[in-house]
Image 1 (cartoon, chains in turn green, purple):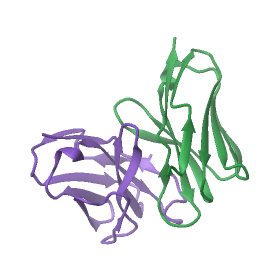
Image 2: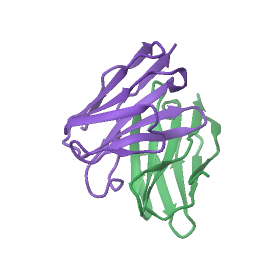
Image 3: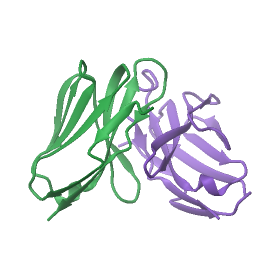
Length: 109
Length: 115
């Protein structure tokens, strides 16, 4: 049973396109995290949010707690955005994160 | 900036060897985690620690142990390496405030191959 589902699994876009990655979860949460992993392994935390919307540069994350759904948007995509984007949730009970399997994004110049 | 440092980027070991993976963080974080990452399976928690000398099993602790003698260091030990432990291993840390209620900071990962 996957507590966190992401879609799509793979995404190819042309430079400049607007990109949306979706995350649905099935447990009650205290926070949702968006992570970015570039080839080579290192993972960077992009956002942690529990309601509404957060923006950082060209990245926007939204969450709808009632619908148990979050989206990560990238505006004016660039080849350097090519990475795997991972959704993770902090459940409101217990002490483990649940992770999605990631969305592999390739932005073509 | 938080720095989480894993001792090796690439490691090749033989079946049956005892393997130590070291992780050090420099931000006085209480919580530290060891994950393994495999294609199609995402990140799976092996062990985590919320304080010195404290440890808790994650989803897949079999074949692994951990040690946290100092706050900044969390070691993962493969008691007798097997080929099914070939994987990417990622260490992470976070502040207190509920184990899951602060951002995770990851190391660059150790790609372990067991032959």
